[in-house]
Length: 259
Image (cartoon, rainbow, N blue to C red; front, side):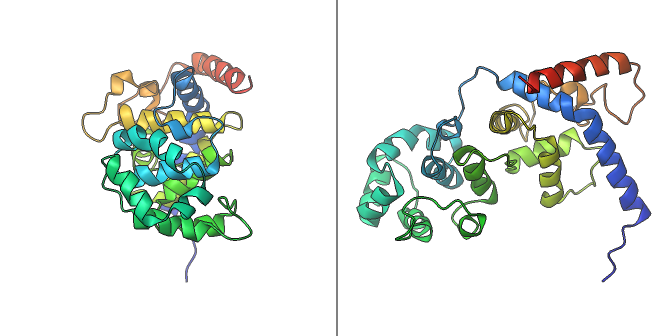
């Protein structure tokens, strides 16, 4: 198989590399400033949650809407506060609670996921990616979220909303149809060393509530000036006379990230 990279692909990667270099600090600064001081839109993505608590939230999210998942999350955890209690309760009890909460989530899927994770030696969620990736009941983004928000690991979470916002931010530097693996790599390159969980939360919430699929609220976005889709004036593909102010902004961004 020919693994050579064409000249066109090479130029595309150079363009993307340049765009990342120019936008990285401003994206980090914009996201962290936008999310600072706000309460998480989804409770299980706030600091201090256990892997199990994040698992329940992400499972509900993958099987219903964010609004419904958020509304039943706390009550479900009160009924089943650990993976051990969830398994001990049994499918009928879990189904009854879900029905009482007014949601159509298949209890069998949740119990199957719990059984895949639960062992005699480890009665809580495993911390290895091999075990977690066997969970067909969760999306890839849901598994990433468990590692990020439950295990506090510096891993980017790229769901459908985040993928859309990344595509828009780097529209001029990405292929016309960007594969998920490439978008994941872009997200990893943007992830700050400090506050990766807070950055992920901010990025996901901004993508969901502002960078919407239909009629995005570009004027409300803190990244509008550097977004290719929004026609930002500071796009790396356009001539700019703001080099000095850009460098000043980057220094301020770096100071914020190092706090």
